[in-house]
Image (cartoon, rainbow, N blue to C red):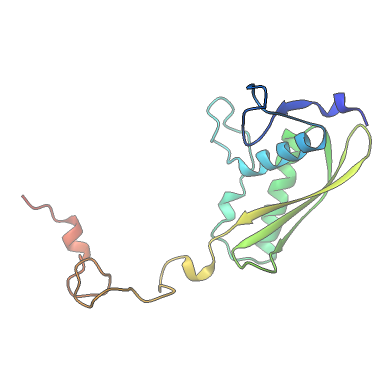
Length: 167
């Protein structure tokens, strides 16, 4: 495998090398960091390249079903095909974490375009669980009944109070 083809770039997250310069990544770690950076960057985040990134954050409130899984997988594939020319994406699969309800795992199977060397990468994608999306709270408000500011109590600010300006 040609390390020259893979290249060398700034480590992500950025850091300082032991010699005091910018920490660098090369070889497979550089490719993996590039993939994670593409998936983790929302289009519009970079002012000088606003189209760079992967629009998966649109799905953060979606319910996890085949439609959401397909939308995330399709967007990851599209972004990697566009922004990482050193790899060929073989498959993207999105599965719910067995341990955590609010984590989807994005499995990316790819190979280097120049060498056909195959790799896998699992990238966590954090979603808002259904019980935390608003509406009925997951847990009742805490505090003393009647305490100012506690939602659902007589002294909590009402909608008309928030819009009323007092002198």
